[in-house]
Length: 328
Image (cartoon, rainbow, N blue to C red; front, side, top):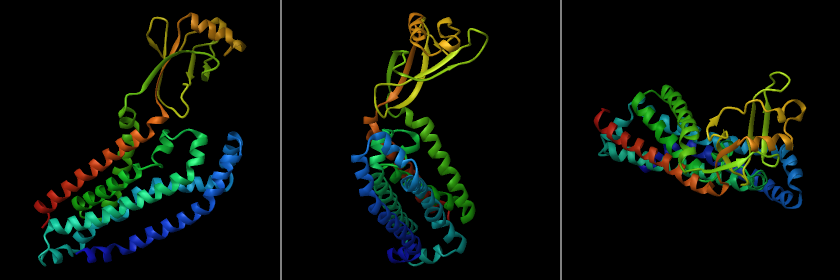
């Protein structure tokens, strides 16, 4: 059964190994020079160099590969795994030769599931290593656009996508609809975890700070007559690489406000100047910022990986239950 599973899977395996080898050679050739540039170039100049030209293209390719691999695994490895055999009826041949349904499914899930996790982990490892100089310069590993492309979390994504594909194939019994369902459900799960679960995995650090020129990120005055209109601001925190989870303006009475009403010291061309900020402080306006420090990167990685691995195990358990009771 193990040999049969390998024979059925070998085409996908060779494609994955070829892609891994091509990416490994490319990154191994260019990575040392990128690291040298980081050590010998000023931060601003280094970022300019990596935001254009070949390094920018390689960075985009690496990001795309790591983001796409889990979804492709669910699409081409998971969804057809059982649905293809259900459509063709070939699984009954194995079941009639003293191989139980549980063993049949366990071998397929075990071999190909581990291969999926290994492939995603290797892709992520290579891209994380190559991108480390850029990540150090940007100080943005916790940002939603980067977090899912680094570390160990792509392993969890791959395990979940594979199990999701197998489950869809088992329930739908048709390969193409199962593939479409897998992609839609996987993207929905990733978006849901990124927007609504990840920000709450760890309690954020909260800072209540005075609005000053030194910590100001954005300042917008909505024009409304000669004295100007309401003001909205956003400030930063003294924590390089921090992920700002939320930010609110608090008035002198301690209440959250959507914007700061008209203030004469901030009107017109006077705008974001020391007198304006002095007046805002006198009126009691503060910014309440909730953020996650960059030092929590690995804590978030482990937590989110555990979530997706747990979901994958639940789906696998469901597949075992379903195949024993509902597949004939």
